[in-house]
Image (cartoon, rainbow, N blue to C red; front, side, top):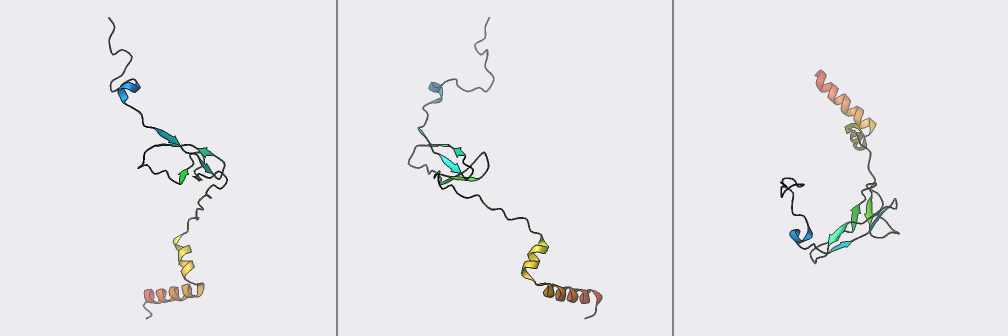
Length: 111
């Protein structure tokens, strides 16, 4: 005796477009990155849908724009700076020496 649910699994949804309902009209938009990759995501065709000016390229991670001849330039990542590097941007070596001497005098109790 054959079972009516043979070949399906628990939690499986309807099998066919008729059971799922009508699909929404889609528009495919081309985006181009600086490496020449083309990405074509689809968007629903509705008045409320806003198509973004840029899209991330899934192949290289660069930003992609809609103009093939003028893609957006990649984001330049600044290298990691240590706390000391930030301090050196704000103070000269002479100021650092003066502050160090002042701190050492306080620790030694020379005030």
